[in-house]
Length: 230
Image 1: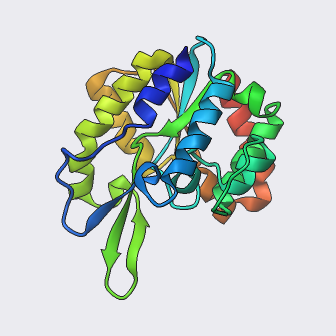
Image 2: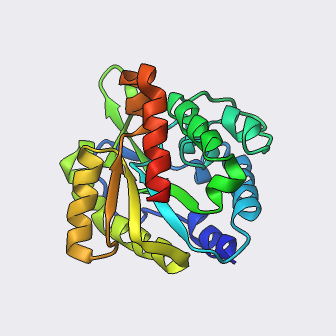
């Protein structure tokens, strides 16, 4: 089943062979202090929504952030939405992520989690997140494209990950990219070189919507829903 194929890879990410730039570390919820709980959540989620062999359209964000996938292992899903919308109880940690607020409003508008995940698989262009040491602040979250050396270092890892997703059983005629700026630019160039997907539909990132366009949230929800049926 699709769940088995995905879990084989999702639970075993590794950047051990990648030489990251100095001062940059990996945000890896599967090997942190809450790893056991994160693995339980991720496995339960996949068993619940992907125990079949239907192809899904990919919806790809940037890379995990500390309060979403960095806490639950599920993209755009904080602990609050994990419990309220997915029905998966979370033990030992509590997070609230604005991106998750928008994302699950959209999922409810699409008919709820079961209907949404029956046709969509959500993850990230780069499946692991990153932190960078900053003087006086300690480690702060960064995206893979915020540091050019980091972007170059992880590109082979990203390429292998996307091929893995396709091999698990994803649609290749269209892919949804969350982030209309640097994420879409990087992904488009990569796809032009590799020819993985027939068409890329770029959508505004949930965090952008919540931070800058909250008053127009319904417009962006409708845009997501139109892309899902387009």
